[in-house]
Image 1 (tube, rainbow over the protein chains, first blue to last red):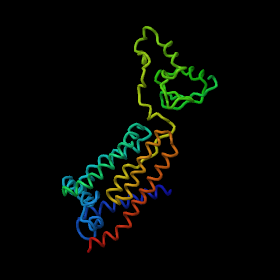
Image 2: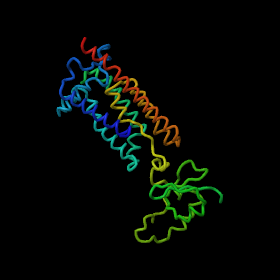
Image 3: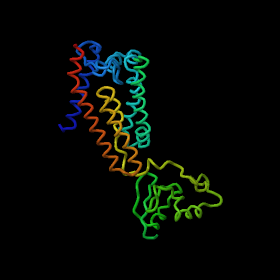
Image 4: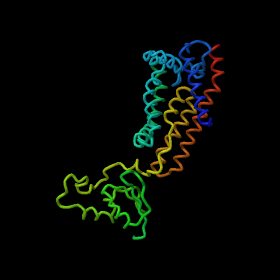
Length: 125
Length: 165
């Protein structure tokens, strides 16, 4: 087995384990990692609620996931599109280059910062 | 000017050249075929290149043949955005944008933002023709992504302790 395929196997096993853990257990309860930024400042970081959102998504509860971390849910279609564009970059270079342009990346940056501020001002999910 | 080298991009996207002006003419370039030689800032539509312009004026018959693909007079402006064809041999290096988003939301926002900032440099350098710089920015992004994931993993035990407090 080559090193590359070994990595794929390890990655798949880790992913499957993570999916099982996050599907079976409620990440709002104790042994699940808690955000240090939230603990220290009382403010939510852009990633706060991601574990609960993943738990909800694995239970097909999109509304619950949205309440836990709306940005994570909103970014999923973009992430999926980007991964498709990356794998098909040779066939569709224009799509790939358009999606990975500076404008798009800076937009992502600004959206994440706005999300960070907004969710703490309006106590958004 | 005869000894000058010319490059062109074929309809299939292949880069042709270096070749002489005669060789280029013998390939029957279309008015919008991207052409480059010393002295041009970027790939330029053949009809915009001075020494090739005549070719299309002369070739354009007064009454165009039925359904000729380029029967219209040579366009004054470039018909396409040639940026994406800037160099067909060099594809744009990955920006890892998808992984940057995932890493920022799941691992560590601080180092994730650093990775994101480096990823913005990839396309800019690529379009500026700095392929080496674009590749380096892409690599730096990947390194910062790895740092982000490692930070996230290192933090997990501490975060578990936090949850137990």
